[in-house]
Length: 244
Image 1 (tube, helix red, strand yellow):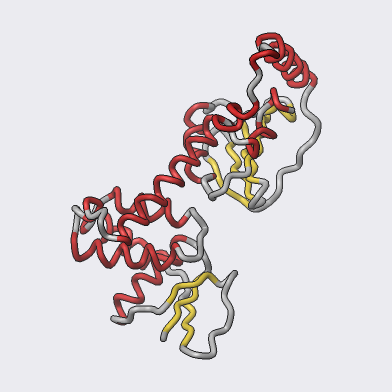
Image 2 (cartoon, rainbow, N blue to C red):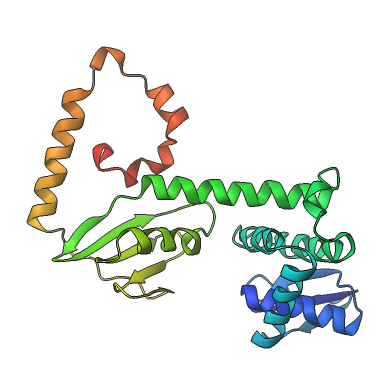
């Protein structure tokens, strides 16, 4: 029983798949080093991340399976579920056998699980895009906080970089302590926490006006908190200006 251990990165996982094929060895499990516990019943092999090997695997997936398959794999990886690593591995192996039609085989548990999980991550990304509220914390610098169930930060930043090309902004995933920083040219994701100060006077005035407007258009007799929670789960309320 061989377990592959890697650094938890996507390139690391792709390297694991490369090594497995090269060694003609099917692992019993694939684990990230952050959650790894020593296994005394089998062999544990640590696989160092190799960008070249990762690129080869991703190119092979794109050409032999499809771009859609590679996207599904990346989305499933962003779920951060420990079980997702073996699921991705099995999906890739199956894809190399079936080819471009793999996603039509929804009766297969592996394909079905990948598609469903990928859709959940995609839905979460769209939800964050809809909900994000930026605040001007310094003149010309905008900040927004999120705490999604899945690590969708890499999926949503391109949208805002395209939409707000002329603004500096930070999107802070407080759940994972990751920050996406955009400087009007490019963006990076870093684990360095942003330095948050009080919002600007203009931003405070705008927020107060928005709260007044929100309150003025609401009809107390028609307030339905249960329906609100159905359309907007309470866990997201702290991201909304009108709920603060």
